[in-house]
Length: 277
Image 1 (cartoon, rainbow, N blue to C red):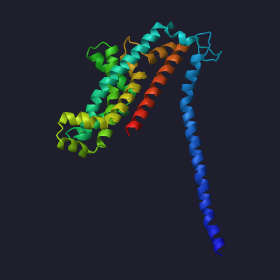
Image 2: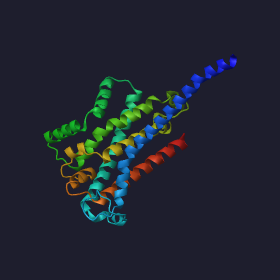
Image 3: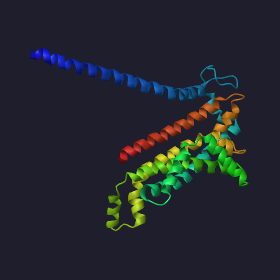
Image 4: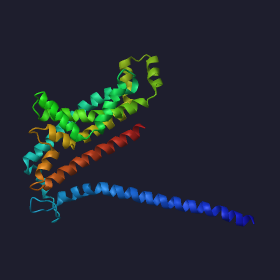
């Protein structure tokens, strides 16, 4: 009698475990499917950088070749556009990281009048469509008599990526233990020394994450850049203009290099964070 009762009790548990395993497999399959969907365009971009195309249209596989890697300078305007994108991204990242870090510190540590409105404006800047921000910035520059070009693109990129850095640093600051800074002051450290020796190392992962996010947002932005660029060409704008006559393989190669550099930076940051932990 007891054996029959035990078997009946274990049958529902087996069914639950079976359903759990099936659910885990379906979830894993779904995750791999999403990852494949996300990485498929990148794989296509990398592969077509080796395409031995005989025309300006690089959409049909015609054979493997390495010759395009030695001919990156065949399009001087493309090289200039890539350099413009890198310069704009670096400048915007440096400025945004400095301003965003200070804003994140202030919002995460202090309570002041207008803090709620500041948070609202930052989240509104993130949530607003790029079309709205680009059009509003263009109207601002035109009404102010500012000639659109390289400088206005940098300003625009700083404005739309500033909120991302500030919120990232703010989240890091909120999670800090204030007793560590108080202990440093009790041991005789000044406010400046406490910040650089205690506070800044603790918020550094958030600062780095915000800086990488700002760089990624800047280097591939198209909509806002289109509104504020004037005669300045960036890498995304050049690709958009080239689609009407054909995108050369050099575009795929440069995109592959930019992607590889981004992956290398992300891996380096991950390894550094783990060692620090």
